[in-house]
Length: 268
Ligand SMILES: [Zn+2]
Image (cartoon, rainbow, N blue to C red; front, side):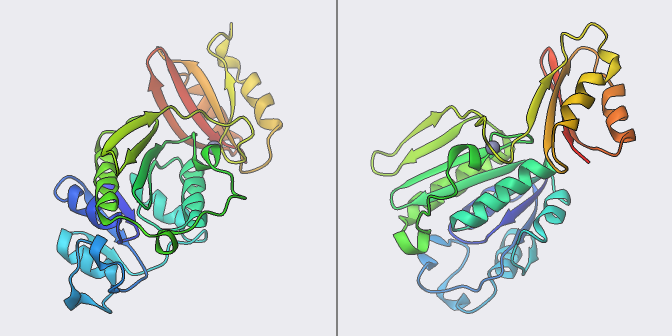
């Protein structure tokens, strides 16, 4: 599996270490090693101060290093070049941006966050639920650098992200670093999420080959928004994705969910 780790800090270092030999890794970071957060950035030592993190982390884990800042402008291309992305960044706005790009490109993201003695991780799959379903953008939380992070918690969450990359599980996995305990919270897609897709179910359609209901649902959506279409799983309806493509819409994914299949479309 081709995995991109965004951020080679407190989360990215343990995640990259835990994925060595289990994934083809690319590590992107624009920063250099600093003394203040060295305690939780386990790929570096004091001899590395001032050196670019991406290149050091890459040389120590057999990865490819990209010395660049992942931004809203370059993120979609970077996501599409990989099968999965790990969020090892610090700070809410970047995390929300990565979450948006994951939903919009259909490339799964493993989110991770730490604050003081607590941490959490979640897989954001094509179509959500996403971070905007969980968090309100207007709530400005402190970054790790501002609030402080227990180094061991960053290590635990980074390794958990690597584990979730290899074996995705639903829900928000929350770690309490004081009690040393995990719990998993079910996460639902928020009805008013500005990023997650609208949904249409055509599994009961008498003549499901018609495509009409999908077309009507897409006409209600603005360009760039996503539509999830539930189809009968036993006979994946190839004509629905093909009809959507013929009209210029983008097919992001078609996956089987037992008796049903889920098609994710991006409106032209
Ligand atoms: Zn969402």
